[in-house]
Structures are given as C-alpha cells and as structure tokens.
Amino acid sequence: MAISVDKIYKSVLTILNREQRGQLGPGQFNKLAQQAQLELLEKAFYDYSRSLNKRNNAGENNDYGNMPKNLKEKLDVFSKEAELHIPVNKNAVKPDLNAMTKSAASIPSQVTAGTYSNLATTSNGSGSGLTVTVVTNTNDFVSVTVINGGSGYAAGDVITVPQASITGANGNFTFPIEAADLNTHGFTILPTDLYRITNISRSNRSISLEKVSKSEFTYVNSSKLTAPSSTYPIYYRDLNGIKVSPSSLGDEYVTIDYIKIPAAPLWNASSSTGPHGSIVIDTATSVDFELHPSDETNLIIRILSYVGVVIKDVLVIQKIQEQEQTNFQKENI
Image 1: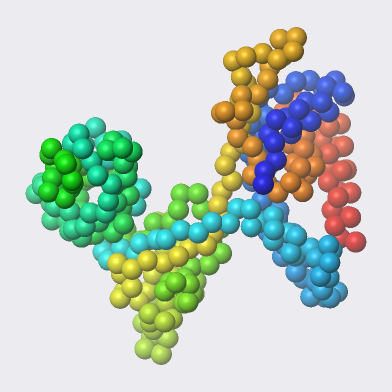
Image 2: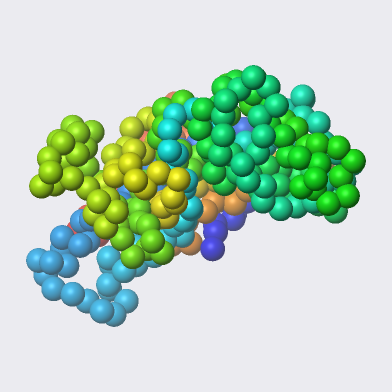
C-alpha cells in the first residue's frame, strides 16, 4: 500500500506549469516530499484523537463513516514490532553490530550460519556473555546480529568465534569491538526507525510494561508498596533508549510495538530518456510514498504549499492555505 512518487511529482509539475509558476527539480521535490510525508503522518495522530473525541460525544458509526477506524488504518501502515534485549549491565554490545564494516575482521573462507554463544575475548578485555547470530550467503559472510550483548566490553576488544564452532572453517572468525558498538548506558537500545512507541510487552505479550517518567521511575522503585515486579514491570525513555525495572528482567527480551519513520520518498531520473528527450523516472532506485492512498490529495496540497515558499509566490501559498482551510472545515462538520 503506497502512493506513487512519480504520480505525485507529475501532478505537482502539471499544476505549476499550468499556472506558469516555474519549475521544481527532483532534488527540491524529494526534500519537500519527505517533509510533507512526515507532517501528514503526525497529522494522522491528531485527527485520530479528535475523531475519538467526536465519536464519544456524538455516538458511534460502524459504517463507512467510522472515522476512528479509517484513521487508525492510516497509522497501521507504519506499524512494526521488534524484539529488544534488556542488557544486564553497562558496556554491552549493541544489536547493530556488523563485522562487514570492520576492516580488522578476520573471516575464514568457510563460514556457517548459526548462533554462537559466550564468545571469547582475545584481547586483554574482560567482557563476557556475548551471543551473536552469523548470517551467510553460500558460505560468504554477510552480517553479525547481536542476540545477547553481554557486559564488560571495551573498545579494542577482539571477539572470536572459534574455528571449532564453524563447520569447515580454516580459521577463527574474529572481529574488533569499536567505541560505536558499545552500549555504555545500560539502556535497551530502541529501533533506529522508531517514530512513536505504542506498546511494550513481555512473556509473549501477556504482560505489558507501564511507561513512567524518570522521576516516577525512581519513586516507584524506592517504595516497597509500588516496587515493580516481573508481572508489573515499568520503564522510562530518554535519549539513550529505555530503562526497564525490575533489574531481574535483565538478559530477557521485550516486544515493542511502534510506528516507524516512513522511508524517504525519492524521485530519481533514469539514464534513459523518454519521448522527445524528456526525463523519466528510474523505478529501480526511486522510492514511493508509504502513506495511505487516501492521503494522495493532501500530499499534493502540502507539497505545493512548500513550493510556494521555495519559488516565493504569495498567490500559490494563499490558494493552498484556502484549500487546507476548506478541508479542515469539512472535517469538522
């Protein structure tokens, strides 16, 4: 479910050319398109909340006019889930480790995919408990995914997957730990494409974690009456990730449901030309909008409002503002 970036770009150009308002290059369009997509995603949260309030006041409509359901469908397009590891201590290894990017990695000619636990540190480091999954493509190394980050690692430690653990290998598989690989805060690292958390749970989704503020986190943990437990866990979020309590949950996993950041739309020109030497889209490298198809008109309007600023045309801005105001009034009838 997506909106064609080529269709939107052509629609915007058609409107601009019809009004002789100037041209909009692909580079400019791509930047404005990403901003418009993010704004419409954020607007969907606001519209969903507003529609719930209206339904509570005016009653429920279970037919096509069920706006909360329709708006939730828009947001569900960006819904994802992920399994996150709760580190036991600081200086655990982050889950985004990829030895392919490490120049000092030593990779044997034969690598077998699999999960390797309690890997050895061959430097003077004292880290322990690291578990990784090695991904291969016909014995060619692809990546390493950290399953358990362990603790006590330091930049410069060299990790070893023993030769004996790799079927047919002619040597150990070693890779260094860099500073960027370490979780020095002891927080559970959130997905890089996270936009907004909707829920965090554990034990096959049977227990939800309650979100609290950082100040509440300290207060709840200090009271015997409110102290969290494995059946009543809590968490708070900051720039480093999420902190989970009780500490007994360390080394376990939680399931996070979240709304992801939409992929940036891209209109890239093909090396081939179209009719009369026209520029055509390269479908292999271009990226469509991830918005719900019902947002197509709003997307065009939002991009045009930015175009008016770029080309410094007050009339374009005024016309788009009038259209947005009309749409808003219709939504609030």
